[in-house]
Image 1 (cartoon, helix red, strand yellow):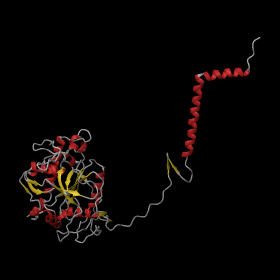
Image 2 (cartoon, helix red, strand yellow; image 1 turned 90 degrees about the horizontal axis):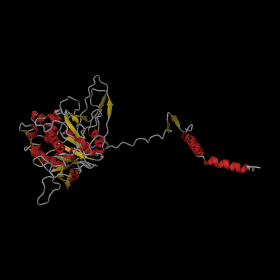
Image 3 (cartoon, rainbow, N blue to C red; image 1 turned 90 degrees about the vertical axis):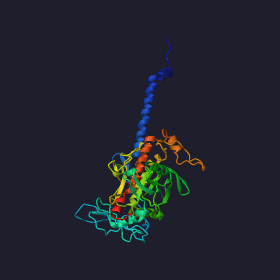
Length: 438
């Protein structure tokens, strides 16, 4: 008689058979994962679901309840530069911007709304002190209004005649013009205004601007450029009295900065008297720290909201003037090729802005034959080098820095002499016609 199996033994054998099956184990794992995922979805949904009264659901996003109201505006600072925009109705659409006036006792910028305009919006410009003329010079930023005699007299008082650049023209344009001048580097609050030059005290003895001045005198023997550039404090009265006078101030840097109120006022007066701000972005391209700061600060210097920096092309006189060394926009650092931008006043350039860091390319010197000068130090006291190349830039030109070659450096120098001559000559025809350049 066969032995009857105990029910417990049968159950054990069945359990062993089931557990031994790999298909069973796989099925169990799938179910466990499914349960975990389902539980996670339920939990997450519970956290994300908006609570009525605290949040408001908008589409796929949860909108937070409104925050506290903003604090009241701070009390106005009497030294702060502000713009007063007055609405005036008129039948025409032509915009004529008000006068930029100067008074001896002005301590802060004020915008006068009573100036007549031919537009529905009239940005009103500033009145500040004039030491060079008893009458008030007029700055028109409209497209075709001629320069006033009063403003022309103020320009002549600073840069005209024998006290100016002693400008002459031998008929060769860029290659034939004669003048005696110094390139002044703007020393301004904040930022790194001296990043591409070497300072000894207040003297600029080596670097981009000395290299540029050296190259200018090689290409045009009649241009008596002082090789040693000078730092010019924008907050100082020296900007109006220094000799030879400043046709322009070269302003560069990498960093964010904010001009003081005194620097803003001095630059406004400098423009009235025929000066130009030449900005050169040391961190090439748009929206860099310097680019953002420079645009913002120029809006303080020339606070007409209708007048922004505008691009010029190769048809501009900077490229087409007689004897031009360069007919096209050169490539800058890291292959940037942003167009030059300008702000004009009375059809004359007041702000000239290069975005491609040409000043860094000028740190690479050329020798007398026009090739890169591979001398990387200033020499000794007994035998100083006339100029030298930045070993940091030239040595890393194919790794950290890009776009540095003999061709790009030479083109940058050609642009430099074009711009320099253009800015030196900008007011000379008007001064000669008015008999104010004797």
